[in-house]
Length: 306
Image (cartoon, rainbow, N blue to C red; front, side, top):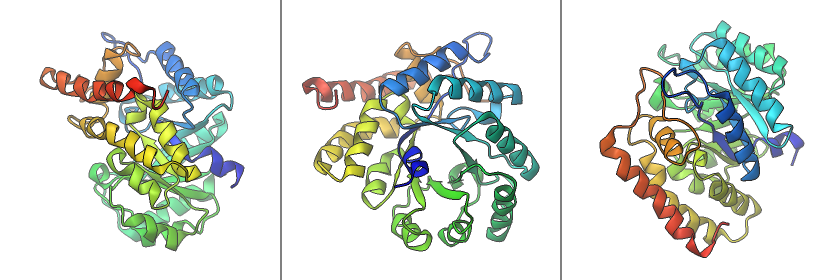
C-alpha cells in the first residue's frame, strides 16, 4: 500500500467549523482543540471546509486560516484534506491551487451543484481541474445535495487521470462498491460518505469513510475502520456499528451539521452556532439526539472500544 493511500483511508472526519455563539465568528481556538482531540483518538484524516464544515458560509480568508491552522496543528500526525469544490470551474481551480500552496495532503472536490451538468461535462470539469494541480484529488459524489450523480462509468474515465486518486461516494448505494472496484481498479480509493452504510461499504471493499458521526465518536469510528482494514474480528466491528446505528441516522434529523454541532456543544467541545441560513437544532430534537449518543456510552460500559 502506497504512502499516499495510507493517508487517505480509514476514519476521516468531516470536521465542523466551530463558531462563537453571538458573533458567529470562527472559534479558531476550539478548532485547534478539536484537531488535537482527533489526533489523540486516532482519526486518520480531516476534511477541512466540507459540507459539515459549512463551506458555503466561509469566506476565502477564513478558509485559508482554517487550513493553515490544521496543517500546523496536525504536524503530519493525520492527513489534511481541503474541500475546494464549488459550482464554478475557475473558482474551484483557484481554491485548489491555494490548498496546494498551503500544503494540504489532498483535495476533496464535490460535483458542481445547482447547474446539473451532463456526464460529459463532469469529465471535462474534472479533467481541467486535474491538469492545473499536482494535488491528489478525491471526487465527491453527493446527488442529494448537488442535483447531479457522478456515475460509475464516468468515475472510471476520470480514474485514468494520474492525480484523481479516489472518490467519496455518498449515495448510500452499496452496489456501486463492487462496480467501482471493477471499473477503476484496486488502487483507486473508495470512501463512504454515508455513515449508516459505511461498514457494509467497507466490507464490500471500500477503503474507509469520511464521517459526520466521527465528530462525536472518533475513537469508535477509527476502531471499526482499523478492524475492517485488517480483516480481523469483523464481528466486533459489526457489533460496534450496531450501537452507532441510531446516532448515524439522528445526525440528519435536521440538515447536517445542525445536529452534530448541537451534540458537540452539549459535550462542551464547541459553542452552539451555525451560520444562516442554517440554524441551531430545534428543541424538540434535543432529547432524541442525546438518547442516541447515550446509547453509545451505555454500550461501552464494559470498555469495548476504550
